[in-house]
Structures are given as C-alpha cells and as structure tokens.
Image (spheres, rainbow, N blue to C red):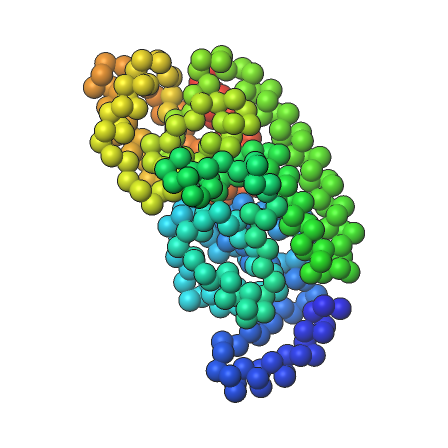
Length: 310
Ligand SMILES: [Zn+2]
C-alpha cells in the first residue's frame, strides 16, 4: 500500500521538483520491497535480518571501511534521497556525514537512528571528550538487541502492512543473539582473569570490555580521527611488558601500522608480544569472508581473542 501510494504521487512530485529545483526523489523500486539504505555493514545486516523479504538493502560503506572517516559521495546522497528508509548509527560514528541525515529527512526519506534505541544509562562516555558518547554499542550483545528492537519498531511504523513479519523476524533474531551472548561468555571463561586484556588499534571495544569483563585499551581514541602519539606507544609497550600480555590485535578497518609499531616498541623492551590476529571492529567481513554477518563477525572476534590470549 505504502509504495503504491507513492507511485500515485510520483508524477505530482516530479512536476513539483521541476518547479522548486530540488533534487529529484524518484522511486527506483520495481517491486513492492522497501528500499533501505544503511550506512555501515553492521546496519545493512540488521536491516536484512529484520526486514527479510520485504526490504531491498543497500549499504553505503563496504567491508573494511572506517565509518569515522567516511565521507558521503554525491552518489551516496542520491541513494539516500531515493530511499524509502535510511538507517544510521548516530553517536557521531558517521562523524564526517554531519547534517546529511537531517536534510535527507526533510527531503522525504524515513530516517531511523539506532542511537534512539539505546538507553542513556547504558552509553559510555568517550574517554577523550566527556561531552560525547562512545558510538561502538554493537559489541555488547544486549545493546545490539536494543538496536534490533528499535529498528523493528520503526520499520513496523513505516510499513505497517508487514509489521507482524518484522516482529517475527525480531523475535527469532533476539533468540539467536542470546545464543551468541552465551557463546561469547563460554569462550571468555577459557582466558584467565589476568590475561583478559584486549589491546587494539582504536578504542572500539569498550562496550565489549564492560559486557564481558575485559580490560580494553585502544592505541588511538574512540575515533580514528586522532593519531596515536609516540608517548602513547611507549607507555602501552611498558604496560604490555609489565603485565606479560600475550597478544595485541589489528583491526580490519584500521591500517595495521600503529599496532606493528607497538609490537616493535615492546620488542625493544625485551619482551615479545604477538599480533593475535585481525578483529572486525567497525565493519563486518565481506561476503567472501568467514564473517559476513554480525553474529559470525562477533564469533570470529571472540575466537581470535580467546585463542590468542588463553
Ligand atoms: Zn570505531
């Protein structure tokens, strides 16, 4: 119903846009599916899972793309203008996309912001700037459940006809997320308390650390926007040597050079720390990888972490 109504208004819209000079918002759908545009791979996966057969999802950022630094192209903006629904993380994750989402909303796309589904009490403050919150909420499964609930709720309001399907998909997904949560807890128990230290390129894992009992240290801050200083590398190398940490980790969406520099600094102090593998932080793996979904990405991460630290 929703889409058909839109078609009826299509011609009127085009005429209006010719006169107002606005960018044209043509509906490129050739079927009844809602056209959803998601900023990150994580959100594209969520939209796929909840929307199921009723949505056609386009992700703006591919696997391995850093959302903190990502700048929307003209093509991205057109894609969002033409979408029925745009979903983004918020909490300044898409730091360079600024006010785009507000303007997309004004131009008529429905916009879902995941930030709205997370209770303020559950948010962690950014360590470098107490005025902003850490955006990496997905690495606490309970918060990702909140994100899924919000998405299903908002999508159901936009496409009421398929609300019961969205809710059924949500219920199924919440169950799978509970199983994932249990898997993470089981694997974590293989690592001794004093070795539960996760050192990565940037501070993407603080929600993970809080939820699953890891001490988490990122060489760069919560955003990759800031560079790690040489004093940061030096003091962290000292910490690793003192605590005899077995492994540190590179991230798929951040160049490995800072972690390699840290490894070299540890070696200079006479201790060997291994690079425990690559973690997916702000992006899922590609379709060809072992981690094309949120659940498989999290499993891959916890397996990498536990296998290197235990
Ligand atoms: Zn990040």
